[in-house]
Amino acid sequence: MRGLKDLAAALRRRLRPSLPPPGGEEVLQFIRDGHRFVWSPPEIRRQIQSHGINIVPADFYSNIPLIEDLETTFEGAPTRRPVYDKVFDAERIAAFLAGIAPFAAEFIPPDEGDEAACSSFFWKNSQFSWTDAMAYYCILRARKPKRVIEIGCGFSTLVADAALRMNGSGEIIAIEPFPRPFLPRIGTVSEIIRARVQDIPRARVLDLVGGADILFIDSTHTVKIGSDCLYLYLTVLPDVRSRLLVHSHDIFLPFGMPLDWARDRQIYWTEQYLLYAYLLQNPFARVVFGSTYATEFLAAQTLSLMGGKCPPGGGSLWFELNAGV
Image (tube, rainbow, N blue to C red; front, side, top):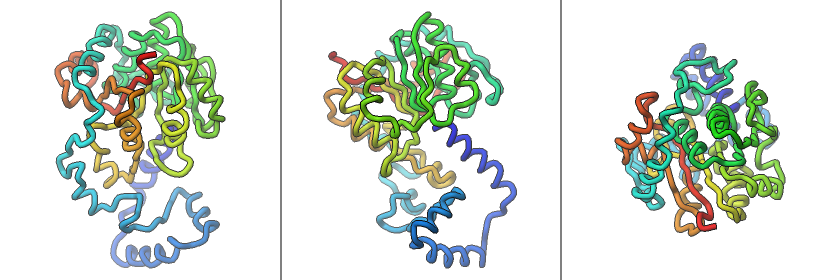
């Protein structure tokens, strides 16, 4: 969620300048200590984790990629390759992009703003921008939804609010365990559910989603025991029977995840691989737009959509469920 991302970024900014990189005997001592602690009992590991640190094995079976594996991955290193492309239809995506483009001219947010005290969207925020923001605005203007469910809220909610106000109708139900201060002040937000989505009973989530036109997902991006991604893609979406347009964020399909995120930032998000498996040969789901795909393979159309207001790019993926309903 955005609150957790902000916390991680703040910790990195605060700690990195004051802590010189370790070396020599310090590294060797850490390795010795690591071998002791990696198999320590749960109560010790819980204490370590409470300080924002995990000590896990690094071997053939590790779910965290080894740095040497990143250098030889079939996804492409150093030049990435579109190896996950079977769910993309260029003609469909180009037609979808053409359908939302007429609304782009009216979306003119400022470049700058104050993340701590903003009341409307601006391009140079740290969370949600580029083609992601432009497409979201245009999609809501084109579809004119009565209800938008956002799982993970923040600057995307400001974009949705601007579009719904232009539409003259529509509500946002926000599911966000760590809401930003401005969230309760957004006029089109009718309800804020301060909880992790996986802690909300499935029947309640299905009821909310069943009454929505748009489901906007910005999750933890993790595939692990009990994660929000498992809950949504494996227990919620398969039981949706109504027509629904779904968004997932920080998805870089048809490419793999950015290798430098894992190598340099220790971000090991795997949501997009679960999502790709969910979409493959799924007769009830079809991809209609992707920011990464459009930027790479429909460059002229995407540049036209952006109109020089902000560079193209981003990680939004949009797919439609039950389009024939």
